[in-house]
Each structure stands twice: as structure tokens, then as C-alpha cells.
Amino acid sequence: MPLRVLALTLLLMGCSAKSVEPVELTGRTMGTSYSIKLAATPDPTLQDTLQRQVEQRLHDINAQMSTYLADSDLMRFNRSSSTEWLAVPPELVELVEQANRISAQTDGMYDITVGPLVNLWGFGNAGTRSAAPPEQEVTALLKQTGYQHLQARRSPPALRKDVAGLQVDLSSIAKGWAVDQLARLLIDHGIRDFLVEIGGELRASGQKAADRPWRVAVERPLDGYREVQRVIGLRDLAMATSGDYRNFFEDGGHRFSHTISPKSGLPVQHSVASVSVVADDCAQADAWATALMALGERRGPEVAESLQLKALFILRTPGGFEERISPALRDSGLLRD
Image (cartoon, rainbow, N blue to C red; front, side, top):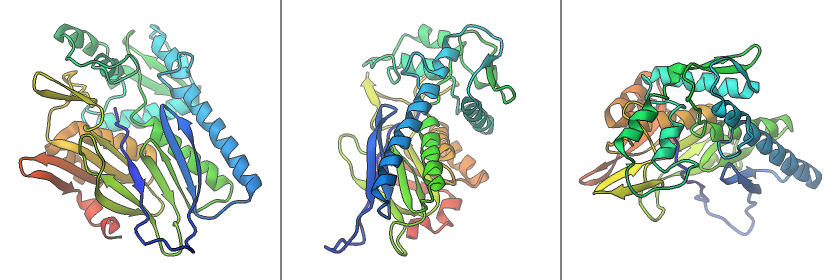
């Protein structure tokens, strides 16, 4: 499941006393913060309307998809032991379909049914831990996971599980999807130049100022403090990052991060410290960042190249951090902007 990773907006062009900074709407959602930067100052009445509508939209998304709200639509499905179709909002169907497509493209290394394993390892809503769980508990939960046991139906919208204990966790895609929903809300109000961010997942539209893109930073994957690795200029694109350097614990000399392998039920063990993905929409960027992180230093870049994904891998090596840039990102011109 994805890590909250910083996506800093940078004032790299130099600010003078005459510079006009974007108007910002902020708040809390999904256990993290959100930020909406508007390049042009809206009418005060519209700004108040936007704030209210943003809060309402985020409230509605949480009511559908949260694993922390016991009465959310998703948790109602998770608590059910029925293997019959269960009616859910169409938004849940849409996200499950998107997630299952990525699962198929990654041979199951991206899987939204591993939530119980994430909880078992102390990275979910069941509390933290400082030691690896017993092997038998991991093995038992593995029998209740697998995206192939989850089906979605559009009409009427419903989900079905064919393993009674199966549960769904959308945290690897829901924040990105929520970013897209807020972007749609702004566009519906005629706003074209903005940057929306939730917990490090973001989407840029238009430009920050004349001939200036929204400039965001990919964080260097360091433990305990923050430093910029690289800056990317975004116009009409989204970006999300997944990494192992914020949400982890160490036990017996081993580092265990929040990205769980659906094959073994264990935290992935490889040299990839973080993956950032640029895509047309944030839901896809969010999910693919997690998927490529799970795939590791060999299969991740192979899949990114074969599917023409714009991806930046940061690897830990004996000599320090090393970047691996997918051809699609290298050829995009974004890294030189």
C-alpha cells in the first residue's frame, strides 16, 4: 500500500515583492492533509463555495472507501462473509476494475486484497508493531487474499468475493482518485490553472503563472529528514510516489516496509527505495507507483518500459542512491522543464 510521500511545490524561479502566490485551500482528509493551489485569485464567494464543496466531496469519498470508518461502504463489504453480489456505489466498482486491471498487468504483484496482511505487519488500521508476525499467521491470511477472488459488476453496481474472508483496501489508489475528483470539481467551476495534492499524490492543471509550470519535487528517500532528489515541471499531468523510507520498522537486522508482496505475504525485499509515476490522472499514477514499487528493481523497470509508463526509480546501492528513469519519462521532456 502506498506511502505518504512529500510532493513539494517549489518556488524555484525567485520571488520578488511583486510576485503573486497562488491562493491555497487546505484541510484534513484520509488521515492526511490536502492542498489546492489556485493560480488566480477567485471571487471570495466562489472561494468559500469551493471550500465547502471540496470538504463535502472528500467526506463522501471517505464514506465510500475508508478502511478507518466502520460504516463505510467498503467496510460493509469487508465485514460480509457472503460470496453473493453485494450492492456498492458505482465509484467502488470503478476503482476495483482499475485496480484489477493493474493486478493482471503485474502478475498479481499489485493487489488490493492484501489489506489484512498490511494490518498484520502493523502498517494498516490495526496499529503498529516492532517485530515480524508469526509465520503461521501470515500463511493463514494468504489463503484469504488474491485479486482473482474479487469481481466487480457495473449494472447494477456490485462487488462479489468467492473467498468469505477476503477484504479490500483501496489506499493504494483512493487518494489519487480523490485528487482526480477534486480536479474535476475545479474544472466544473471553470478553473483551469491549479495544483491539487492529497498526502503527496497530486495533479496539476494549466500553469502556475505565464510560461511557468507547476514545479514539484521528488523527495530523496532518506530516513528522518527531507531533501529534494529531483524537480519535475507538470502541466495537465498527475504524479504519485511510493517508497519504503517513512513507514517501516527494523527487526533482527532486517528492514520491513509497508509494501507487502501478495505472493509471499512478506514486505518486499529489494533495492528500490521509491518510485514516482507521472500519468494523465492521479488514480493511475497512485496505483502504478505502488505496483512498480512491489515489482522491484528488475521487473519494475521492465514493466514500466513495456507499458510506456513515465517512472522514476530511486535505488539504494553501496555507493549511494541511483536513479533509473523509464524511456517514456526520459523522452517526455519533463525532467528538463
